[in-house]
Structure formats: C-alpha cells, structure tokens
Amino acid sequence: MTVTQAAPLVRTADREHQDRRWSILVLLCLALLLITVDATVLHIAVPALTAALEPSAVQLLWIIDIYSLVVAPLLIMFGTLGDRYGRKRLVLWGFVLFGVASTAAACAPTPLTLILARALLGVGGAMIMPATLSLIRQVFTDRRERAIALGVWSAVAAAGAAIGPLVGGVLVGFWWGAVFLINVPILLVLLPAARRLLPESRGRRDRPWDAVSAALSVFGILALAFGLKEAGSGSLLPLWASVLVFAGGLGLLVAFVRRQTRLPAPFLEIGLFRRREFTTGVAGVLLGVFALVGLQLMLAQYLQLVLGDSPVRAALRMLPLVISAVSGGLAAAHILPRVGMRATMSGGLALVALALTPTLTWGVEGHPVMLAVCFVGIGFGVQVALLAASDTIMASAPEAQAGGAAAIEETAYELGAGLGVAVLGTITTIVYAPGLPAVPGVSAGGMDQARQSLASAAHVADQIGGNAGGALLDAARWAFVNALHTTVVVSVVLLSLTAVAVAMLLSRD
Image (tube, rainbow, N blue to C red):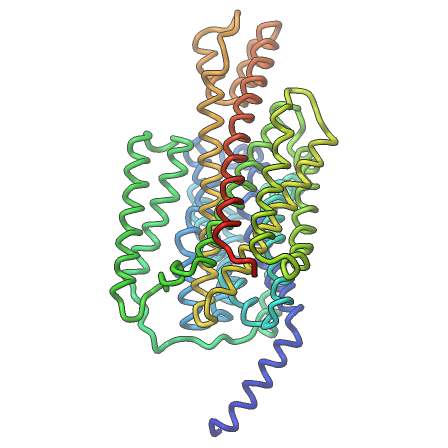
C-alpha cells in the first residue's frame, strides 16, 4: 500500500474514534475509578483483613501504603513509555496486570503475599493512569468538549478516592477479599472494550529511551514520597532518617533535571515547566488534591472518633462531597469558557477556603446541616479548580508530549495526596498530644498511650471505664477538635495564598 493510500485510512480511523469519543471517555473513567477506589478501599476493610491474616503493625502499614508508594514514582516513566510505544498497548497490559494482581490480593494467604500483590496493583495502575489523560487529549480535539471531558475525568478521580471507604464498607460484609476480587469481572468487560474502542497513538520510536533518567525519576520520587510518609507516621524510621531519605530523593530529582537539560532527546520535557501556565496548573493540582485528600482524612476521623459515627455512616455522610465534586467538574466545563482559567482556578480554591471556615467554630457537638454545606463547598470548589488546572496543563503541552504532561499531572495528584495526609496528619498529631492534659485516675502510662492518637485514647478510656474513662475520652475529643482547628487554619491559609498566586500568574484566557 502506498503512502497516499494509507493516509485516507488513518484519517478514517481518526474520524471513527472521534465518533466514539464519549464511549471512550466512559471506558477511561471506569478504568480511572478502579484505580482511585483501590487507593482508599482498605481503610474500612482493615479490621476484617487483620482478623484474617493477622499482620503486624508494620505489615499493616505496608499493606495500606505500598499501593500509592508504587504508583507515584512510576507515573512519569509509564507516561513517557506510552508516548514512545503507544498508549493503547500500555492500557491493555495495565488491565491484564491489574486483574492478575487483584486476584492474587484477594487470595493472599499471608501479609507478605498481600503486600507484593498490592505493589503489583500499583504497577498496573501506573501503566493505566497517564494514558487516561493523554488519550482524552488525543480524542477530544475541540477545546470546549475537552473541558467537559476533563471535568468528568477530574470528578471521577476525586470521587473514586471519596467513595473507596464506602465500597470497602459494603464489600467487606461479605468477605475481605471481595474488595479486590470485584475488580476482576469489571476488567473482563473493560479489556475487550478497550481493545475495540481505544485509538492507536503514534509512537515516537525515533527518540531514545534513557534508562538512567527513568531510574533517577523513579527512585527520586519514591524516596520523596516515602520520606514524607515516614516523617508523618514515624512507623519504620526515626524523624532524622526520614529527613535524610527525603533529602536524598530531592538530590536524585535535581540530578534528573540536570540530566534532562543535557540530553538531546530528554526523557521528560523539563522545558514544559518554563511555561507559566503549565507550572501554575501543576501547582494547582498539587495543592487542590492536598486539600481534598488531607482534609477528607481529618474530617472522616472527626465523624468517627468525635461524633461517634460508624465507618459506613461516616462514608454516607461524606456523600455530599462526592456529589458536589461530580457536579463541580461538570459545571466547571461550562464556567471555564465564560470566565477563563484564572478566575475558574483561583475562584475554586477560594471557595474551598471559604467552605472550611465554619469548621473553626465547631466543638464536639454535631452540625449535620452545616457539615453537608461545607462538604458541598469543598467538593465543588476543589473540582472547579482541578478542572481548570487539568485544562491548563493539557492545553499548554504539545500533543507529542501529552503522555509526559499527563504523567506529571498524575504525579502531582499522588504527591498532593501524600503531602495532604503527611503534613496535615503531622500537624494534627503535634497539636493533639500536648493539648491532652493529665486526667485524674489515669496512670502516666495510660496518658502516654492516649496522647498517641484519639483512637488510642478511646481504647484506653474503654479499658479504664467509669468516670475516669469518660473524662479521658471527653478531654481527648476536645484536644482532637483543637488540633483539627489548627489543621484547618493551615489549609485555609495555603488555599488562599494559592488562589492569589494563580490570579496573579495566569492570564485571563
């Protein structure tokens, strides 16, 4: 076949994928939903999992954290591999690996087996995630439609993490392994659909793939994420060692950046960060997810440990956040063309800061109506800001670099989530411990245990019982609420400063 004969065939295939673009969006969002739900689905399944496998405290930490620790450093590598060898191929192999790892996790006989299976889940997720964004860029060529598609994508990304505990709460009632095994039938439907619907992307095999750059980026981001998590939890390493790991990660990333500036065909186009719009969009994603995930974790603890909600009831009470997130993503697609990126992104971040402010007046009493209102403001504002940030990132990157740009955005998502949990969790712990005074009738050892966390205080109070136990629990709840107020103040300040910075750095368009 001659080149002139082949060209019409390529254009015909492109038109077919344009006609199927909304079906492709549904497929990509379902894949993204699986990956994001898996990041938080274990939060409620932990008691049943612990009873079945009896992991140690350190093993349990790795079971929960290994997924995101593997996903974050691999995103850039798989994003660039998708650019070179084709995104469709990467998605299909990612589906296969995700299904195999889900089956292995559901049938895991020991904690170590489950840790390894969760790590494989992370590899499969990292293969799929960057391609979801870059394929949206490839299929939706009209910017207005692409804004709608990105709005749906960002809403699904946030909603998946939010509904993960709810899904886990429902499935664990049958069997703890069901939280993983549910992925398999869904993937058996998605795999043939992806094979038929997804377009082939034009690879860049003429460009060399630098293994040294891949290693620097993977180990640099891994050390950065691990150091952050350990600084927040201190489960495996002392603080000084966590700081050294974090600093080592920064050093590897500096070496990675310097290497990219010297390579004739860089592994990642660092020049993208010279574009003000791209850098601002990445910062918007990082801080938007920081606020969403970190505050979601803190407020979930408030519902369960202060107000006494069960995990499932707490997840149900957080549904307004999920619904408003979906609504915000869809509404932002219509707001963005009318008011521009600057107003959309800065306005969304400012709305989140405003929605958080009423929580500063709350104590240990319930505020069901205002709680729902605050969740609506947080979910809507974050998604409006994230939609504008996603559109800014993808619009400012050339199509040939769409995979790398998408991988940077996904890495910002993962690092934002890690930062939110580590930083806000650490602030809460630092303020909570000294804020819990000695309680008459409670031993010094009991007070030391109670100052570790509100959950530990509840356990000690239950063991002591009587008036002393009740007094300890009341004091611990107030100490946690005061710590939560400090966390909210930090979040409001960061969100407000980011909103101002976005308004100054982005153009009106």
